[in-house]
Length: 571
Image (cartoon, rainbow, N blue to C red; front, side, top):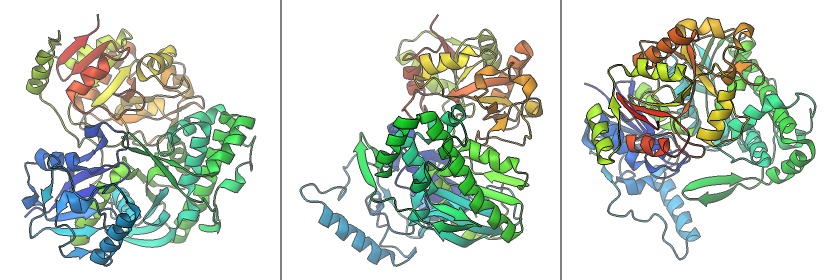
């Protein structure tokens, strides 16, 4: 009998996932439906999709797994009777009462989230369904370990801003079990430090950290060494030697998205104004790498392992991941492909599964295609309803390859939408990487974002050693690699200022249509690699539905949109 587990995360990057007998079958963030980036709202659309995708109802769910050690009062509105049931966790009913009492005392004239409107989907929990709470960082750890493909001993490290009173946790993973070795609290948050620098430079805390990382190569490492010393915690030999007082967290909500602010950002901004954002970004990246090394490698030595798995928002930093890999101290390096909070639903559900079946095999995750998909029939109905002119082609990958070889910009929409922050060939904007000016064209005409921002390449798995130094499999664009010197001038649009690439290696068995597209492009141009960015414009979530793809296509400088086998052109 199959075991069905529904993971539900309500908070920053709300999401839902469905695990059937230990395998991820559906996973999606609420932002993809309500179109609010990093949406913290109740994930009722995500839950509905997960169930519908597998033809299940709430009566089929054995366990609901929530990635929080405390009750989340808003979930009591979404799930009827969720905290009346027998649950696993520290005095959940009494904790919920205190949470609700505090909320009631803080609210005066408006009764926030006391009842949901009738039109919002509510879910009735079956009598046999168990509700379990999995601590925030344990959920992150589970997402990394239980997708690593091995039961061998390894160190698992999680790092983010904070969650359930922790910012960093260290775990021993062995024989299907996770054991916590160390927790660090708010004063140890390297995530908050890096986000404060991001805000000081002028970007959104909790969203723009990738821009800070991308700006790093334009600054000079060590030029401002020590300038930010008063703004971050310090570690030595795997232990904290200085905790930083970040003060109060200020939250500002705009159009459904929570934005954060600490007072440190005000002081760091003065340094940005004085020394320039490039060198400040370079110093922030240097600090992050140095402090992470001071945590990770001493613990690997203590545990006598060369296997490392990682999750949490900090591990979206691909340069950090590259530095860790290039030390040569790591033999097996697993970074969960959706490491930020949107991945918590999967982690909680996986932990609940392995708690119930600790002897079960651990599967290796090789793709993130867990979102909605749309048939040709569904897409054609949408095209006809909009009176759009289109053509249907017999071989979409070959057709797209010819357009790309002619240096056209092609939106590529197919199959199941990716979970996680990266476009992996199903909701992508593609262009040849063979001309250096193409990076500027996409930034200016399509994404409407800063000119320095780099783009990722998708390349054939079979050709990875032609392009990447010290390479390994990288299916999720989660680690950067140095581009081989002989290829840097061949694919200049995806080579960053420090000669690195952030690749997706594409295997035919995992995404045959996308593999075929890149292969056909390679036959025409000699380069088996394409520039790939997510199908959206800056500030919006990745496209989910065909109608959103159409709207996006006609609102920027793309040349062609290919929806499964249908082609739209602006010619």
